[in-house]
Image 1 (cartoon, helix red, strand yellow):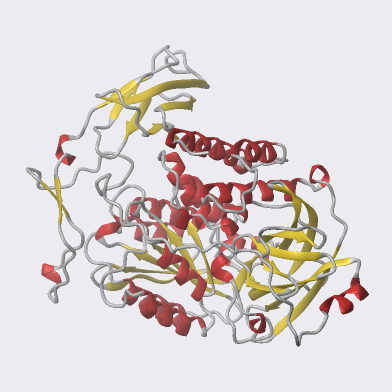
Image 2 (tube, helix red, strand yellow; image 1 turned 45 degrees about the vertical axis):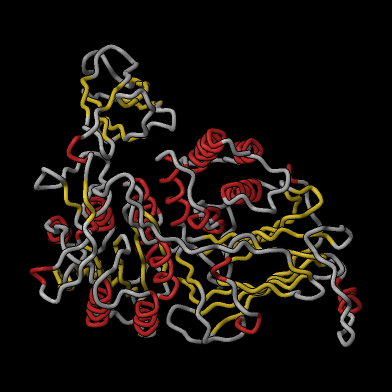
Length: 601
């Protein structure tokens, strides 16, 4: 016990000298929280003497904890950051003249890194997101087949969380509904027999439109114990360019890879490749038992210079192929903010490179870091084309989730090129729309084409997809009238043979070292259950989907509001041993508050 304080909860408010509330980072030992949009904070303190307050553009504050449980803080502006000149990007043939987005501060020869690791000024924002055109309803009589590639990525969720914790609603392009939904674990049964995953379905009512139904399709990958996973040949490809300066960039990369290093086994082989103005091999083919040697190599890295990402990727793959383990897990783990600006840097150039390299059997994991200049669209593309996955690491807790708790799912593929195709029965369904997966849609003929790339499923991973369905007997303004086709077959006559079926779900997948696909078929019966009896998986997934629609102001959100999402999710938290579902409820409450302050609905 210190200062008479033990297991104490401290609250307070943080403002600037003008009295405006601030969103800042508050630390007490290993505990870290952020104040909300009104400057209010709450933090658990256990045997800690000091509280630390930091925010970009403000002088850090340190206070000694006394007997009080309330501490209100006034933050002072950091004068060295009041004025700055952003130098233009320059490309020089001589490395000695190279500069990359250097921030030049008036009257100051160096950059001050006060605040939560963001070395760029607060109003500097070059983050990049792809535009998402939300899936609309399709008429079953015209288009009964829906085909898409699975997606196990969850980068969008942690990125959205970062925006909300910083007191901002995320841009629409940052919200990929399928990644919000698939951030969470769902209690689907393990597969039986030789199949690497099970297919499970639930049909119930839509929480946002009582005239519609919602079909959940859940895939559960087989969980393989760590000791039974194949040997790994891992190449840590680390961006050490100037844009990786700051606490939430390279220092967080190091801490993340320390966690991953602790999971390594003697049979695993580790290499480290870095890139800035040029790329190089720091460590080559070291056994996973030499953990301290690996950590020392990681710890010695420093940031500065250009971002020659393309050259780094080429060298990483070359290193991976040189140490290739037959029937093993061969993978490049890229850690970057995605801000490539030297050599191969365009999306087209990088895509061609990744597509060529993946044919050799080396998979790709992309870990995104940083804020202000984060290139989400580029990293998402690289992961998709590299037979891999994409996570956004917004803090050490997320690094632990991705690289420790979900170690097998993140790094060990059990099925590749996994596709889903759903055929709807026009006797039961007038129209449907797939929620999310806009960037994963495939043509119907792609389903049987084994040359068509699709998503990968890792050990223990689950994949959830939701379809909003307009029942056949319901009139909907979302389905526009068209004239009947003169020469088409009457599909309904054949559909009556399967009048008890709502849909058929088909999946194709390949074993990790095979080029030939396997087929699984699952029939969905037309027997919807009430929402109250649909189970926690369905209820929580539909709440997360609804949250995504509210953030993007979807035209299909119907009568849904934040309060309904909060209620639905709160009642479907279930066991929640890691606390992620409870955290989600708090995120929705934060978003509601920010929307109200904007004057939104």
